[in-house]
Length: 408
Image (cartoon, rainbow, N blue to C red; front, side, top):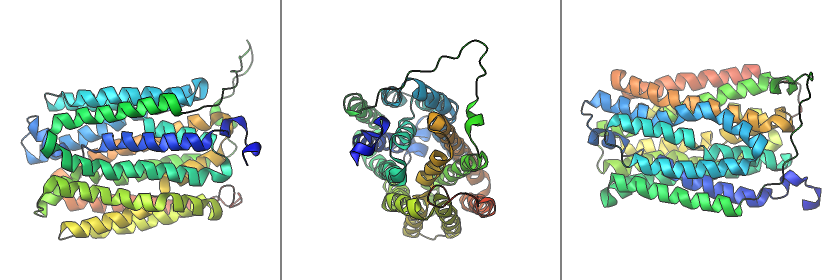
């Protein structure tokens, strides 16, 4: 099979291993603060309960706000100068930013440093672009599913680590340790990732008409729809995460930070189990169909989460929701990959990443506002309404002209 690969796909298996490892470690570092974020906000001087919830949402979403603006730039620079260089930049930048968060003295510094982390980081999104563009199309769903499993594994381990470490070594030292772990990823990316030499850039001659990337896409509607779906998927996930610790307080949970880590990790565990399997399944039956079904199931599972009476019910429901969410992002990336020319795939996937970041910004802010003013249960109900509407839109707007094996 290797003899049939073009040069850009020659090292795809090796690169996949490095990207899975790098995404796993960086996501651990980025998610370990979730169980103790409200406690850290209180430690930095915020005392009002509603303000704690809103500041937690703002601090969590700040990273994704700055990342949303820079993701297309990194995707474009990756197309031009190499995606390995972008991953090296992201891992080193995140190592520095995470260490600085441990030095915050007030809540405004925390938010600004989280903004810096998003500006400098973006390893997992860069890894998604590299894997999507340097994997044979016939294996793209499976490869992106494996990468998604690595990302979800980091999302599983991160909150558990965040629930265990602060009582042992302190909150600030936890951030310093996270920076050290990301620095290991920087070293692995620098020395083990292999990228094929890039073709020389075409020089635009004077008077020659420049073709815009969007003009190269024959059917733009599926790509635009995937941008919206990517945004709503992350909105649905992140509107819940920052309020879980406070929600568990209302359920009178003991060992609060540890249990918050377990609840947050349950969804990630479900996604780990399902991501590669759903990606492989979607390669056969069609990515659009899998996205529609997964959205519908995840929406339905949000309703009972609003009415749980103990933490273990929430753990089970979050796990089941993770099973449904696991296939979404790999299939979204695969649909975009199949819908655009190779020359602009990195840029379009960068826009998709920006859409995800927009959801990751709006989700925590909306969840924090609804939870602080209308109660925690309203967050689940509002998120259900959005995901259900998205699932219905996917059914109505499904393309009919393309063969299932190529796009669905």
